Amino acid sequence: MPKPLEGIRIVDLSYHVAGPATTGILADWGADVIKVEPPFGEPGRPTGLSIGMRADDGCNPYFGIDNTNKRDISINLKTEAGKELLDEILGKSQAMVTNFRPEALKRMGLDYEIISKKHPHLVYGSVTGYGEKGPDKDAPGYDIVAFWARSGAMLDMVDASNVMPINPVWAFGDSATACSLAGGVAAGIIQQMRTGKGCKVFTSLYAQALYNCSSAISSVQFGDKYPRTRLRPATAMSNAYQCKDGTWINISLYEEPRFPEFLEKIAARPDLAANSEYNNVAGAKRNTEELVQIISAEVGKYTGDEMERKLKENDFAYSIIHHIPDTIHDMQALENGYISEYTHRDGTKTMMVNPPVKFDTTETSFRYDYPLCGEHTDEILKELGVGQERIDKLKEIGAVYQRELGSALA
Image (cartoon, rainbow, N blue to C red):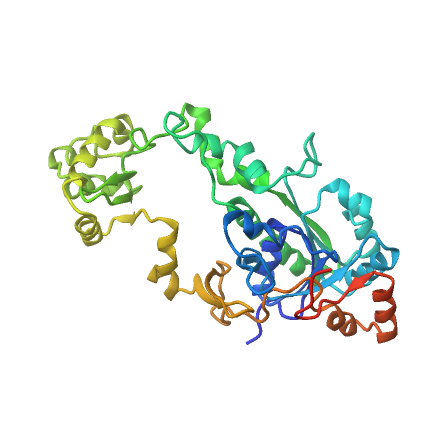
C-alpha cells in the first residue's frame, strides 16, 4: 500500500536539524522531498565532527538521521538563473519547508509574502528560533539557546546547588519542534487538497520549548518551585530512587485510588496506607519530603532486579534509569523498530533512530541513502521537464551543480 504522502513533492530549503528533521519525517511518510543545497553543501553536514562522529561522504550518521529518504539538488541561489530554477521547482511542488531567518528569506526573495503571491497553492512551512514577531524575530536561534536556555529548561530542570546549568543532548528541541511542524505541514496539505489554496504553517524552537514546559509555567504561578531535586520532587509518588546495588529506578504513580496500595506494597507502610494524611494526592503533597525518605529507605533494601519484579507484579509504572548507550541494545526499541541497523555508503554499520510515528499499512524503509550534495541534480531537473541543453548551460554558468559519486566536493 502506498505511504500516506506518496505523490506529494516537498522542497526542503533548510539546514542543520529543525527544518531537515521536519522534512525527514515527511519523507518517511512517503513525500518526495527535494533537498536544496548550495554548491558547498549545507552547514549541518560537518556537525557530527563536533561530537566525535564521522562526517564524510562514506559515513555521516549525524547528517543522515534527518536526511535519509531525500533527493538532493545543488542550486546557487546567488545567481538569477538559480533563483528562477528554484521558482520553477516550487511551482511544481505542494509544499516547502525552511528554517532560514526572516531577514535572510526576505533578502533572498523567499519570504512568505512573496512566495504566496507567486505560488498561492503552496504550503509554506517555517521554523525559526524565536518566532515571527518580537525583538528577537531575526536573532539566530539554535536548539541549545532558543529551546533550552530561553525557556528556563536549562537552568530549572536540575538542582542548581549540584550542577548548573544542564548540558543538554544535542538537537533534543529541534527534533520535538520538527514533529510539531511536520504535523502542521501535513494538515496544511490536506487543506490545500480541499481548497486548492496554500497557507503558512509556522512555529519556533522557543514556542515548542514553552509548550513542553507548559505544566511548569502553569504551576509556578501557584507557588511551585523550580529547580526541583530528587529529595524535593513535585510528588514522592513520581520520583527516582536508588536500589542497594546502585541501580536507579524511576517510579511514577498519579492515580490517587492506588496510593494506599503503593504505600502498603512498595513503601511497606500499611499504617500510612490507612492514613488520610498520606494516602491521597493532597496529603502526599504535604508530606512529600517525609515520603521520599520512607520510600528511599524501602527501595534501598532491594537490588534493581528485585525492585523491578516487585513493581511489575503490582502493575506500577516504572523504568530503570538508563544511560544513552543502553538504548542501542534495548529490545523494546529494537523490536518496535525505533532503532535499526543502517549500512552507510562505505559499508560502515551503525544503529540509527527512525522517525517516531508509524502506520500499520506501511513499513519504515530507507528508500534512499542520505544524499551527497547535488547527487540528484540532473535526475530532478529532467523529471521536472528541464532539457539537457538547459541543464548543461545551468552548470556552465554555475547555477547548478551535479555531484558525481566519488568526486570531491566543490
